[in-house]
Length: 246
Image (cartoon, rainbow, N blue to C red; front, side, top):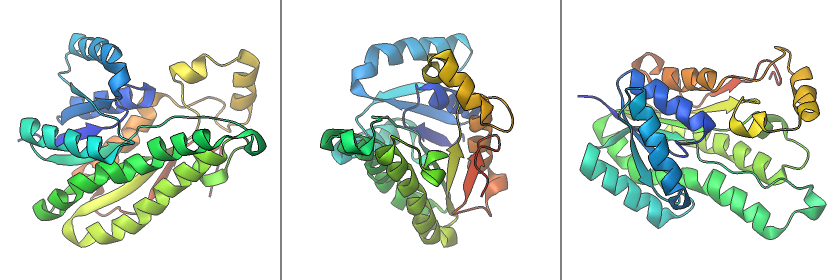
């Protein structure tokens, strides 16, 4: 029986590539999206069907614990227990710290970090009971090195890996692994829409001389979701083209 995987933020640039990769290797996929994105999610679902991929979508605001619990319950009732959770939902609200407002801080922490608790908590006990689970948290190179104008985002992304390291210790004896993937700059609609001079400046600082393809992030996630990665837990896998080496 195919294992079920939930990808939060699944209809975004990186989320889409993750869903495609996991679906192609046989997972029963559910892509989460924000309730405000329902029309876009329906178009996304049709696009995946045109690729030969049957991927379910589900609306939930993962910054809400109650919404996350409801979502997990609906998936469990309809598709079965969640074996693989990819916490990929994220937003940015960039501002230099002296100009950053409280709501910009709180929004990023709630969506990028609180959501990791909100969605992992209702799947965790089932994973422990079944003796198998994969929790994969999509962080960022800027959670490792920081970034000007991203005190909120860098804090949230660093916090994700702190969560990974702690929870990995709780799941290890039960066959449940928890890992982080930290992408560098990735070719998505957001980065492709950047001013060309800004984009070229970013690329010039990457030793590989290019941004990542979303499929390269998805490949790292697929590896960590697989049975072959069963002895890897608490790790932070950087996929950044040499931008930050630690």
